[in-house]
Image (cartoon, rainbow, N blue to C red; front, side, top):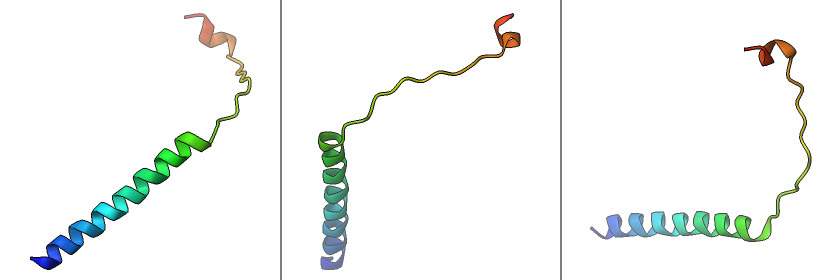
Length: 47
């Protein structure tokens, strides 16, 4: 049974590290905004 608890504790620590990394990305990384243009062929507009 101690091996199971050690394994679950390891998984919990790994999940906490991943979750912390996701929160750090959301908090500290700001996306760059830019304009986007895409040309549409006239054949697709005729429907």
